[in-house]
Length: 333
Image 1 (tube, rainbow, N blue to C red):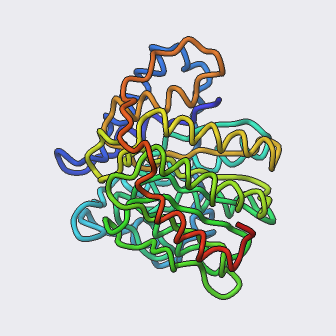
Image 2 (cartoon, helix red, strand yellow):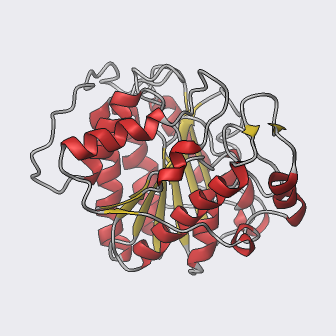
C-alpha cells in the first residue's frame, strides 16, 4: 500500500502540549521504517487554491490565507503564518490519494493538519480545509462513499454533503463529545435524505459493537449504494488507550475494520479505496494500526501490542438497532 506524506507536515504545530502534534507522524514513520515499509512513500505537491473552492467558500479560504496569527475557533485550532501553505500540502496529499485510488492503487495519506471538522465556511477541531471532502469532489464520480471511523463526528464532512445524494456519508463515533453533532436522526436533507448515516456509540462501546455496525449497517448500505470509490476518514482516537474519547476499540478492531473496508472496495468498486488520516493521539497504538494496514498480507510485522478487548458482547447493540430502525426507511436492512 502506498503511503503519502510530506516532510512539511511535521512543521505544522500549535501550542505546547497540543494533542495534534508532529510526533504523531514521526511515530508512524519510525515504525514503518522499522518494519521496512518506507519504500512506497510518495511526496505530494501543494494543491492549487481553486481546488479548495470545490468545497470551501471564497471568503473562508481568504480568511485562512490572510488572517494574522490567532485562533480560528474557540482555542484549539491556531492559525500561524505557515498554516495556509501546509494545509494546502495536506489537501495536495488528499488529491494524490484520490488519483492513486482512481487507478486502483490502494493508499493511505498521512495528512496534517486533518480535515473532517472543516465545513464549507468554517474550521475547528484542529482542521482548516476538509481534505477528504475536497478529494471526493475532485474524484468527480457519480457516487462516492465516505466512511468516518474517527471517534469524533465529522461535522464538516457531514455538512458539506448533507443535501447531496452523490455522496454517502457514514460515521461511527462517540455520542455527545466534540463537536456535539451526529445524532441518529440526522439522515440528510432534501435530495440527500437517507445518505447521511450516524452510529453514535456511548462510552464503552468497542470491538463487538463496531463489528455489529459493519454487519447491520455499513456493509449492507455500501453494497446497495454501490459507490464508484470509497474514502475512509481514519481516526484511531476511539482506541481504549487513547484517552481522547470513551470508546474501547482495540488495535485489532481498527485493523480488521480497515481491511474489511478494503475487501468491500475490491468487491464493489475494483479496489478503489483511499484512507486519509484524521485523529489518533496515543502514538504507539496509532503507529501500529497504520503499520498493519500498510503491510502486505503475510508480512513479518511487529505484533500488535494494544489488543485488550473489553467490549465482547456489544455494548453498542441498542444504538445499532435504533439506527437500523431509522435507516430502514431508505435501505433494505
